[in-house]
Image (cartoon, rainbow, N blue to C red; front, top):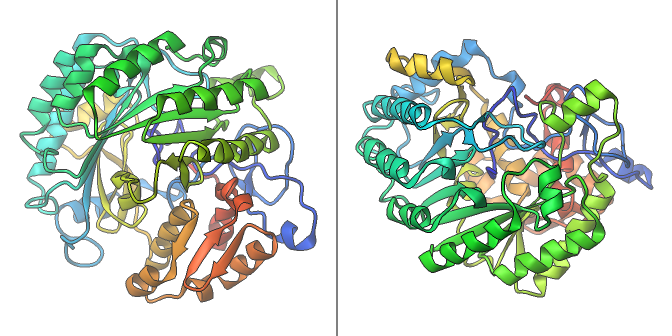
Amino acid sequence: MPDLAPADADAADQALPNRLPVVDSAAEAKSTGDGCDSNGSTTTTQAKGSTEVGSYFVSNYPPFSQWTKEAVPAALDALNGKPPSGAIDPSIPLGLYIHIPFCRKRCKFCYFRVYTQQNAKTVRGYVDSLEAEFAKLENTPGVQGRELEFAYFGGGTPSYLSSKQLRSMRDKLQTHLNWETAREVTFECEPGTLNEEKVQTLKEIGVTRLSLGIENFDDTILEVNGRAHLTPEVYQAWEWIKAADFPQVNIDLIAGMIGETDENWQRNLEEAAKLEPDNVTVYQMELPHNTIISKEIKELGVDSPIADWDTKRRWMDETIDFLAGYGYVPSSGNEFVKSRENDRFVYRDSLWRGADLLATGVSSFGHFQGVHYQNLDKIDDYQAAVAAGDWPINRALVPSKHQQLIREFVLQLKEGRVHVRPFREKFGVDLREEFAEPLKNQTAAGYLNVEGDEIVLTRKGLLQTDSLLPEYFEEQFKRVRYT
């Protein structure tokens, strides 16, 4: 599961989890952040109960729903060396996102653009389209002469590709955009798609950070939620991964899946700790509109089968304490690492500080020299565009300087600690003054503290960081659909 951007706008009401607990005081009521109603709009209604359809996870700003076709020329200008600032800033780190939209099956909670059970011919055709897009980017003035700092293979299931297909993709794509010099190359894997040869191939093609989507260690829960793998495949894949000795390995878990219980969540933590990964990422289950679960709730009128927000936040609270006993510390509201000093998630850290990200593949999101953009979100449209030699960009937005400030602040707040000085140097703004009112409100509510030159989330704030962020949005974006 990707750590930041949704792979598909139609298919991803993506922002932060956001049903909030009942509040106990006037100060807290003023400052719990906005939730998300069943239409995907933010709302100030506080909800303690079920995880309702429309909850979302913040990964960008302004909201994706504000991006338009009319702004696409601005994205093209930026790529062609004419960004809003007037000139390309080569000092900005350059990253690459490659979307691989294929999966063995669609999980019931999935909100990304995916295509299931595709044959080798379809995969080969898609890689050919990626190559055409890469070749176009290679000769683009805004990209020429710049080296990649990081790359991220997301999906979908990138590990759906066979070893032969992975090598072919590497050989075709790296002739245009070479990730061999990148500080980090992340690759998402589904356990059941791996074998020993494929794991070795991932190391061979330059992967430095492997992310394994375990989600749960209970076969019944995996099956009920539509996952393609079972736990024996997790343990077998882990043996191959450890033997390959990747510089960094992350595992994903999801709190609040259908059928989740206190006992099962405790077992998940115990099994995760036994594996001793470098990173553990824990997502709190959400229900964006396009998931199978959401459609069943809306069409059949059934109750939400997902754990309520109080329960999921309690499990996250227990997770912090449990993993601390094994040497893990939070590096964000949902990520745990062996030590902050050795935490090397270059993709996240760079994006949340304004790095450029080239979006490649169907429905992928990017940000280039001050312009947000997203590719066409249907595979046929995407492939037709690149075959014709056109840019496959579907929509874009040029954020103002103030909106760039908000974007970087709210994303970095997810790390639990924001330093004021870098924002003053970059934007000429003191965060403590710029956001004085929401900071005051959230301090009074017990979510954060302003400690000298740092804004630091409390444990309470860390458990529900995403629900706090809309309070920093501009007024016109607080109650709009996120995607």
